[in-house]
Image 1 (cartoon, rainbow, N blue to C red):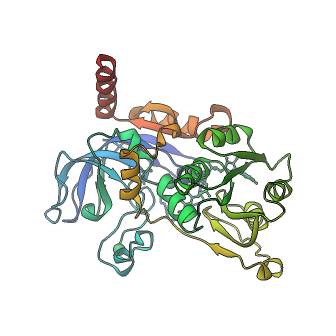
Image 2 (cartoon, rainbow, N blue to C red):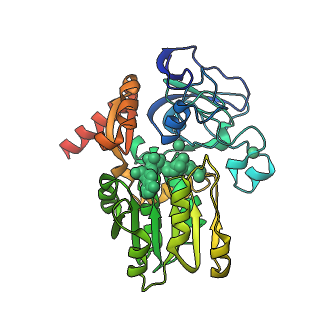
Length: 363
Ligand SMILES: NC(=O)c1ccc[n+]([C@@H]2O[C@H](COP(=O)([O-])OP(=O)(O)OC[C@H]3O[C@@H](n4cnc5c(N)ncnc54)[C@H](O)[C@@H]3O)[C@@H](O)[C@H]2O)c1
Ligand SMILES: [Zn+2]
Ligand SMILES: [Zn+2]
């Protein structure tokens, strides 16, 4: 089969490798119909994730069709269309039993495209299939559910739920990449009073307005703290999300909130960050951190079915799976291409898309 293989910092290839096979009875083999690329894949390619060894297939978000299941798998069967989550669950350990799959002690957690071969490939071995894949309702397209694999549950769980967004809240979101934009969409489920998006890139702020931000601030040219204070009668935001992952934006998030406010950190930090307890201790603040668990996939999927959550705005570019190398170039050059998420379509997925268009044309 063909797959996108990491060959060490700065190097990747669309290589021919052995087809995956069932190793454990809890495995499934899935044909990848639709996949995508994440900012984390770019981090791996920069060499920022040393646990990922050269030779690993990248990718941790996909929709596919089950081809084969191990003897221990009875809840999914060949032919089923399934969403694969960026986080796998053994289903048996203490954390999995609490729904905290990201912290799985039994070999799950974030493993695809990190510790084992991932999902930017024609086929994948999916461990713990019973606990780690989600059947896709017939009425939804692959593309409608694809972003449930990572960005939507990340922003919802680590941002909106940890930050306890409530109706009427002023929500400030630092960083308007796919994660910040998914935070806008999922925060809106709670009817905040005001959503403020902050980013250095005007193109990202434009997207933020399309996704539902009420106000945007370019913190390269404006004083974000002063502007948020002005919008909130000098108090500050009820909740701030950090959706970048650098020290400045974490510090900014802590400066944006009112006394009694909440900072939900979503960004992945590679460097130490200063925590200004000398200013914060007296302000009754709450700061949360988290790795996504994806326990909210079924809930978010129901909202997509009912039309209350529409992730279609994320898909800015589409490529055939065989063009994954060029898709990486487009995704990595987001400043010029405007890419948010690039959709990689296997032949089955593109055939289904064409069929859907035909049906729409006839109707
Ligand atoms: N906690 C989790 O489980 C989890 C899961 C997935 C991703 N993440 C992390 O979430 C973060 C965001 O992911 P993404 O895919 O949206 O990243 P991204 O790089 O696409 O977007 C980041 C955005 O931040 C903006 N930005 C950069 N520096 C800034 C600054 N100083 N001030 C304001 N804006 C600034 C950029 O212009 C960009 O729009 C990353 O750190 C990613 O690793 C965390
Ligand atoms: Zn990801
Ligand atoms: Zn587990």
